[in-house]
Amino acid sequence: MTTISCKHTCCVPAAETLINTACWTSDKVRFLATDRLTSPLASHFPPCHLHVIAEIGVTLTGLGALFLFLGVLFFFDRGLLAMGNVLFLAGVVVILGVQSALKFFMKPKNFKGSIFFVIGVVLVVWGWTLVGFAVELYGMWGLFAGVIPAMLGFLRTVPGLKTVLDMPAVKNVLNRVAPAGSGLPV
Image 1 (cartoon, helix red, strand yellow):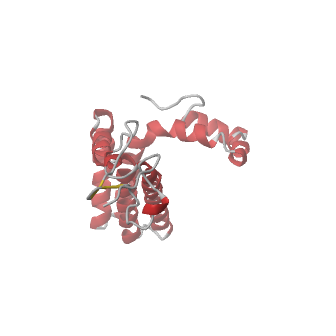
Image 2 (image 1 turned 90 degrees about the vertical axis):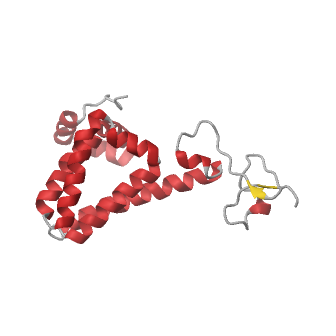
Image 3 (image 1 turned 120 degrees about the vertical axis):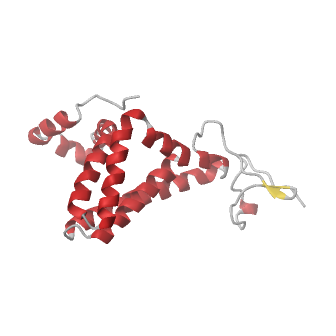
């Protein structure tokens, strides 16, 4: 069998017809990942496919948020809320990787938020949607409150949103929730 090689050990035109478009060497497919990639998924896919995995994770998380929003909009519909929870968690796991997601949810400072989030999901599935969603929100706040300053910092760089976020009333509320200049707590 011939060897096809490429500059970055992935995605060459001759190999595009293959399912994973990875480089072939002798009888097997080699999946190579660079050292700078920390996701456990990086060892299973060539570097050129990692952005696709990240896009899938962001899409799943966005769909989860959409389903949660629709669940609230349709008077706390149990099915939509449950589907939103599943998609949101799947997106987080795909973005971070299984081990990193477990580490994130099991950190001592995030453990309380994780417990409340899981209890909220169980309450939603059992039919106590209003109470379950409130408990979930408290859990999400406990888990993701540290990320809010970084998200707002990013949103402040978007030209259209910058004018909205710089309005005095909005700015006062946002500075109480997440002060400007505070980044991710590491």
